[in-house]
Image (cartoon, rainbow, N blue to C red; front, side, top):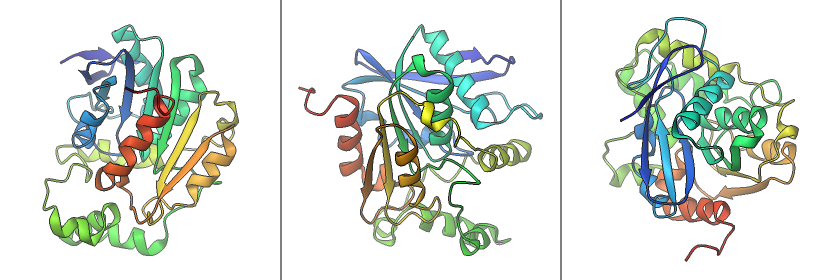
Length: 265
């Protein structure tokens, strides 16, 4: 599978799948590789060629030990991949930190984004809502197994976890080096797209689960109100990994938006 160089020379690994006439870029969450999308990618491939890639710092992409990690910089990495594919304009679906990257992609490179979907994401501080202290404490436990369990319960409902023993692809890349993990955390924490959001011209859908406390649901209407003419859809009962657990709702919802609802055969 292809490797392309980012503007600063870092190697970026990506994959192209599917058979559609249009291209859909799928952007994964913080500290996760392209396998984040494994369980749902096929939902889009009858209609799109999908692009999944490893952010710098994860998977098969380069892992520089420098200050080149930022959500805005990740968006420039995506442009390098589109250039390598010869794709002038793509649809973009980003979730969690991938949604933060997608905001910059649409704001900084408006001619490259056809339609935009922002899932379980945030405009960042100071205008966005941060997760509460209890959630931070649960994730920061010294007991690694307890912290992992806490993350699982933020991603999925108890009922889903009881019937789906894994593997789980949304808990981070286990091979990610510590310096890159810290850099991803900082990049996500420093994201602030507030002033750029009104400049987004791509038709935009904002999707979020009503029970998401990992990235609080209140961030969704903030984005939808800030981006001109954006649509908002909240999925009842869903937590952070709504796109996987509530796949039967989320994938058709996103497909209908991307294909202008009803234009699919």
